[in-house]
Length: 410
RNA sequence: GGAGGAGUGCCCGAGUGGCCAAAGGGAGCAGACUGUAAAUCUGCCGGCGCUUGCCUACGUAGGUUCGAAUCCUACCUCCUCCA
Image (cartoon, rainbow, N blue to C red; front, side):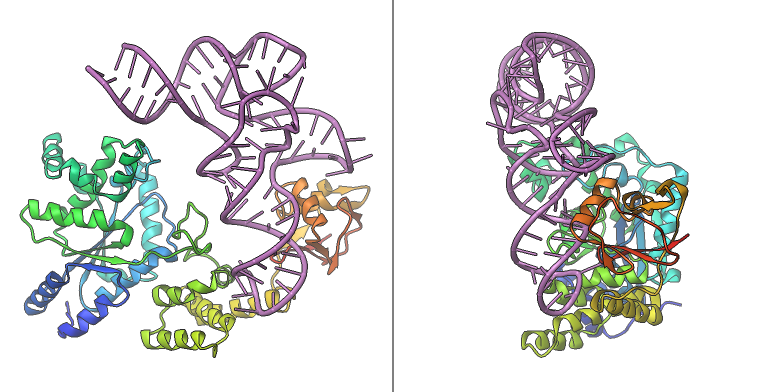
């Protein structure tokens, strides 16, 4: 049984919190009023590209907001863009992608579902493929669709206009992407579409098309874009600056500790589950110098890690971090490497070979470099000789840099 | 159909006959410092051997040359303009 939160003001407060933009606010109020009046949940849509089923913290910003919608009694629909995925959201580099196999698609969808349900309530979330309506469109219907938007309008989109001015290529099929995404909203009769601020154009296209098809236009709700570990570019898998929600606790905690200090508050706001008042307090504390940035960041790291791995694991990750990085001691669990004949010569282990074989470095050249830089230790001693041959001692620890260890077994 | 332009290392981007494994930036890695895997500074940053050496690499395939990322030919891919 659906239970919509009856208090309009409360709903508004929750919904608006943390958003970058809501377009238009007035219609949101109307929709909410209606929904309360008829006890009818709003359909909140989010589109995802099914090619990379690896959810990272950047995605969770929007997902958290969706969870709030669920808690308010609304309905969340996740659109897996198997069809839009063939185009890829235009960036200027993509060309048409090969359609994914059924099998691959289902596998990705499954992974997605699993990951998304770490945040959303599985029972209240509907998953759909947009091929289920897009694939059925006849060419005539596609023509009709394209007739509903002018080129001038399309060129308003940031990256299109930029590319157009720069004389860089824009393929016709790229124009189809916003139209397809917008048509998803038509097909679903979405009330609200969520996205990052970079989705503004696409979300507004949804509104436009819904009007064209005689529907109530959806509300576009945009969340801020979360910067990745480098602190500059948006978090994305292809840039390698992401924190995946499936990553092991130690990894997650450590990565969170490596975000630039300036980004901490934003992370608190967008990916932690600290309440707004507390975040405000932390912010003040930092500004006044009462709080130590490191301690604050540790709080953040622990909190976020706990969301995905539970308190206990988060606690452990923190212990691990303190021990390994603050006290420069050894972690409690070190992968074991069994000494094999291929890393040996004359009964001695050849260091570069060992490092490569154990996966601590990617080539012998790199192994030599690390040694020259003083980054390699055996049993706590810095190694100077890049070609070191040594008789392996059972359980001795080989370390490269701060983060990579193995325990030797003879 | 015609004219012109582009293709460089993980990414961006300089380089138009030797001093180029290729400037600079970003990312990454190591070290120092610290308050953390922040910031800052220094170094490294194709592979193999390691003191000078070899191999692979500047869209692809050939060619000119003592010597080519750089010149020529063909091809591929892409872009712009004109029609």
